[in-house]
Length: 364
Image 1: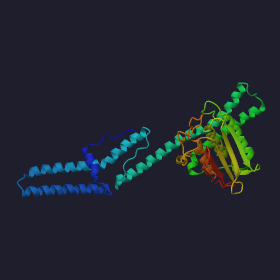
Image 2: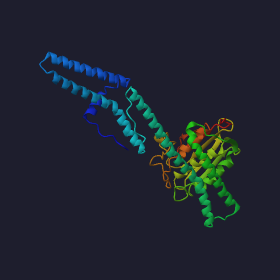
Image 3: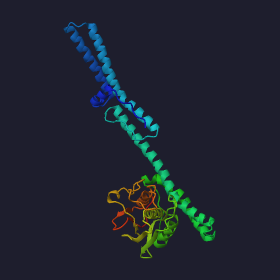
Image 4: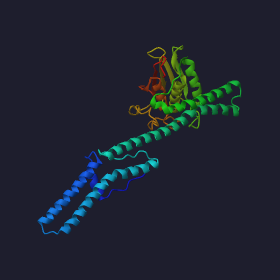
């Protein structure tokens, strides 16, 4: 970060007075400068004629006074440019948080407002770029971990290279390819133009497949060992329950919620995924419950923000804190469906509730 040099005495006086702020034009300020110089010179000449002071002395004082006033005003006019230069150098060094003072109403004030808007846009673009890289890393971790687990089992002789095992590896590879394509849509999430490919499907086999993958991949990305001690339980009622949603986006939601719940579960804990029919046709109400320490009420409004990793007490024995992106990605996917996600009250652990409206949605 590039810092401005400390202001001198004249600059501090100028900051306190800020005499140019009321003017809406630099031309008006320069005009008043000329008028002020003429008035001072005329006053000193009048004093010279009414006193014994020599005209030459008065002329010298007039020139000195005019130069001082001009220097004072010139400093005020160029101060915003000096400040913009310092901020520009800081931005060139990667610091986009700096802003210039924009309290004036003249052309320099308008320039300062435009400069601050530009700096804010650049900061947003830089933040979005960093977050997109983090999102990609986070989302690719799960299928890569699953594929690695399958291949390690084959190499170690735990599983045979039979067609079923190879199909499991192929599914992870296909999912990896789909995620690469879908993660590119994250750059357009803020504009609300990410397409949804919704369809009707049975909830029980769909969630059973998600949990089967989760039982293999949970903990393999950033944790040194798999949480085999955590039991995953699926509760779907009625068993023939159907939903209408984007299956791949919903997979992101459930997988991230389950991963988060497993990470914060105690030893030999239980994670329950509960699915019920919502209020509308083919609507869906999902709940993911764990037996961990839960989320304090003061932090519940922030758990779906990017890079928020929860309080210090919200960690299981196998938790590394995560990347702080899983719940944010889940929120975005739910928002795309027009649904809602939030932390619900629970007598024990954490309970996150997801509601999807169901029914075909216009994706134009």
